[in-house]
Length: 214
Ligand code: TYD
Image 1 (cartoon, protein in one colour):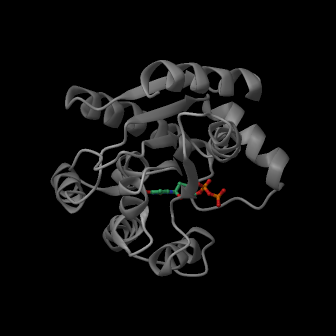
Image 2 (image 1 turned 60 degrees about the horizontal axis):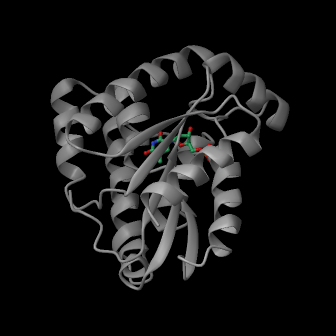
């Protein structure tokens, strides 16, 4: 994987379904737009809105079914397209745009890792070789029970593929082991208490960004 070819910064939000990454990405965008250190801001998400991401959405909503390895490879392909297509994230970072990303490769090492063997996880790492390492990844730490309550409140019974309690417990364990191994390799992953009021969570993100990235 590569360091950010910047000058723009790459900020990633991660967490279980219901952890609040999408809400925080939007709040961060509005705040960053008002900061004099930041010339331009782009908010984006994975699975992306591109052609591969669109296929993945069909699997998540169960319109399509797919082998676990195919899905893992597809998430990686979507990520590479998201980074490298002509209007992609890398082009924007090089132009000085700050990019806020709602989910990135840590998600794959949590969700897809669930159904992959150790050897297959090595393969998944290899597939991610073209990726850019974020300047910071914020992991919004929210207990599974709270996530499930939030998903139920927001979407009723319309649960997606990974939104079940037992499954999220397993995803949570994978997240923590992936965080450990990426931190050991020198990645900057900040754990934020995502159970706080959303404004307190935002405050935590802003304080860190102002101290470390401006
Ligand atoms: P999410 O980000 O919550 O988007 P939405 O608000 O549209 O539901 O959902 C994306 C789902 O995809 C979530 O369950 C996590 C899963 N996912 C993976 O399994 N692997 C990945 O690499 C990524 C980026 C997401």
